[in-house]
Length: 268
Image 1 (tube, rainbow, N blue to C red):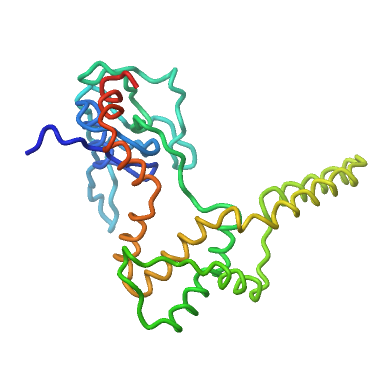
Image 2: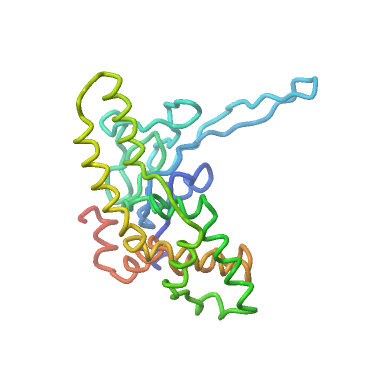
């Protein structure tokens, strides 16, 4: 066992149960820096009981408590999902080094990172299978590719032409809200037609450059899809780790011993 090697644990809202209990224990003992987003908040022990007629009931029999004495179980739910509890309403506990940590609602990372998810034009390209179809075309033309770590896709112009040929169109969230505003203004007899049209023109102008602004993320999604055709799911995972911005942030922290120690001492 190595008790000194620096450790960074990545977690997000899908980290639940055993994974967040482990992460929370490492945080309480100041043995690792947690990075990412707040975890799910499942700190219960549950057992199944057979009640006959081919049916079972799940019974909560205990709670997990981690070294500081806190329980990470979320205590408020809405539609089956945990509801964020204000920090002012959560009990305070101390880590081994005296850092303040809170109970309830999962484990809060020491270093918060924005949740990296596809949105806007990237989400539309994925939902309309544009990137999927492009990867299919690419695969038909290329019998093989470089190794997972070496492969990169850089033919942006080729992809742009493919998108145009597909007559790709999408409605942004802003456009949907503007459409709702127009309908409400019309029903309430507010003369906002000219103002709404001005906003629509501004949004259309901005949308022309949206693909270029999202180029890095789109290339990442293309590489993921292409690699998956040759190296399957394992290959996609390996490629994603190479391009993952959170992994990059973790590596930066591991290489910055001063910052790493400051976080664990509570002086960051």
